Structure formats: C-alpha cells, structure tokens
Length: 186
Image 1 (cartoon, rainbow, N blue to C red):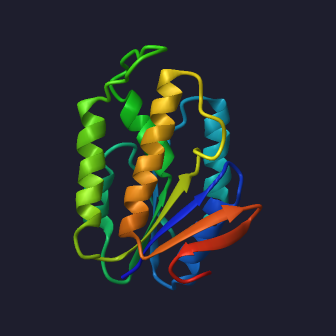
Image 2: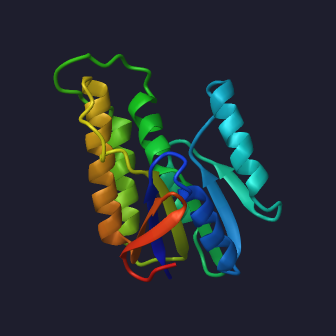
C-alpha cells in the first residue's frame, strides 16, 4: 500500500495531480474534504473542486477528525485522497474560536495537539490502503510578521516534515509540473 504527499503552492496544480493519481489507481476513490464553506469565495473554491471530480467518487467532509476518518475509510481496493492538510491545520487552530495574541508565543488548542498526534500515530501503523495527502507549501516565502501566521507556517512545516518521513512518495508541484522529492516519479 502506498502513502503519497503532494505539496505545492496555491493554484500550483497539486490537487489536480492528486486527483489524477487517485483516478489512475483503478481503485474506488474516497475524497476526504477538510474545508468548509465559511464564505462565498471558499464556497466557489469548493464548487470548483467538486465539479472536477468524477461522480463515482465518494466524498466525505471532515474538518478535524482526520485520523479516525482514515482508520474508518482505508482498506484494500480503495484509495483515499485527503485535500488538504493545511486547511485541516487551520480548522484545528481555530476550532475553539479562541483569540490569539498579535505577538508572543501561541498556545495551540488541545484539539490541535491531539489530532496532530493521532494522525502521526495512524501513519506509524502499517498501511491499510492507499492514501494521497494534498497540502500547501507555505514556508517558501518571507517569514510572516504576525504571531498567528508565524505559528501556522511553523506548524505546517513541521507537519509536512513528519508526514513526508512517513510517506513512500513525496511530490512537489509548481506550474502544474510534478517533481519527485521522494519515491517514484509520476
């Protein structure tokens, strides 16, 4: 069984590549959407992604409990596509609607810590099925000035490193072109 991480910037083509990988697997595809339509712009993005997906794919919306969802969905003959880890991190950071300071150290909510640990523990178990994770690479620009943004970039970078270490294949997408960082190329 294969675990793949697909990284890239906004509108880099990472989701389209992950969808092609899932489709070409010949397996039943379950698409795990971690986002929710909080405003009209996000609703339009979600609609765009939905329109691209084949009607035969099953979609599961799960904004926070990713490890439990993967435990329930992964299995032989199926590939699970998770889009995306950075939105999942955002959901976890803001799930409690707490106010964060503009400066200083950010204390992450217990839900964030628990769910992140649960995902890594799940990844440490033998694969029960194929999974493709999609995530935004946000650490290639300037260091953000606000404490919340810096914390998010730091946590995304740490998560990417931890997930990449546990995946057989890691791909980076820029301008729609994949680059194999680890494992087999596309």
